[in-house]
Image (cartoon, rainbow, N blue to C red; front, side, top):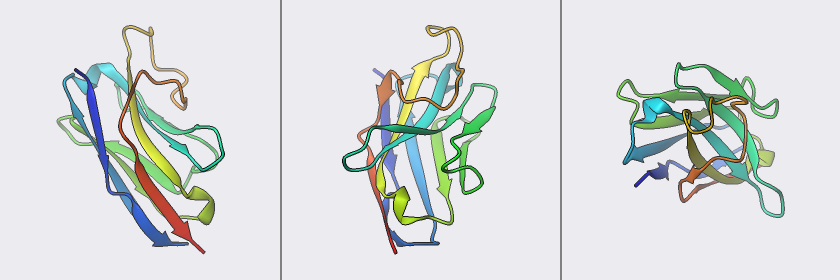
Length: 127
């Protein structure tokens, strides 16, 4: 049973930073494409960052240069470091995954159609 559990959301002022974590359970994350997707109230889900099994990363223009995705060495925890936060970054943030083998690859890395999802963690940025 694939499980993803996010933590680290909260409220911060514009210009501040937050670090989200995503614990992965029930599978070997080294064979899964991973990413972060966010959804603001009244808007569609937006893929913002993805990471391939070899560590290759890609970012949406909306977060490039401000957000950084990473994994721990054991590939059991996915992180999203968010700096220079803006009010428009306010959203529910989801950790997501899908099998690299089943889908014959991870490209494009930035996407919103993952197979497995965490419960989400709220990020609120005030001006």
